[in-house]
Image (cartoon, rainbow, N blue to C red):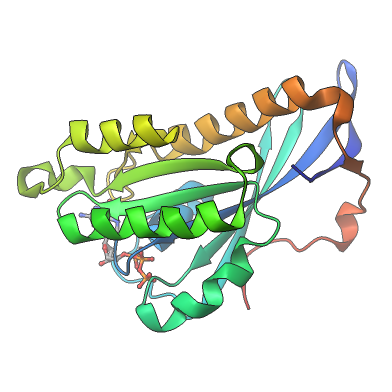
Length: 208
Ligand SMILES: Nc1nc2c(ncn2[C@@H]2O[C@H](COP(=O)(O)OP(=O)(O)OP(=O)(O)O)[C@@H](O)[C@H]2O)c(=O)[nH]1
């Protein structure tokens, strides 16, 4: 898995910075933009339509490394589906989002997974299945166990979240980074590390 690293400083000495590209995938209106917005801005807006693709960046300071997440938020509308594989390129992790109140979005998530499986080998990317809109549990169409079971059989991380009530949003990104770091530790001897100049990297939010 190609991640970029550069040395940074920490009280203990040199601490690497890893840049991880995370893509958000899923049907329209499942809450992909809202999850990214909640994670990066700790805020919730009722309307955040995505046109094509937008991205956010977020820094995360951990004991063993500094993480820079580049979060690519793809539009879920069918008309953008054909260009989406371009956004997969170089991704380290994917959040496969569905809406727990809409069974069809869960079925669609399975199809998005098939797309990912065509693009990546299993250990090339960390995939998390995310059942969003947990605050609407009374209107639930997808049981927690159903999501859990599907994730287990496919070897995916799994969490139910609410971008609205800020339920497990940080947790899912933290679970992803822990898994990425764990895989890195296991692969360390063969790992390809690229030094990059963070000055040249994009910051803030933007739209392509
Ligand atoms: N109740 C509730 N509503 C949510 C939650 N997350 C998102 N929404 C709402 O669901 C709608 C769609 O949210 P978006 O974040 O735009 O969804 P999206 O998946 O990015 O949609 P596209 O950009 O069309 O692909 C908006 O009205 C949000 O306010 C949530 O956790 N709970």
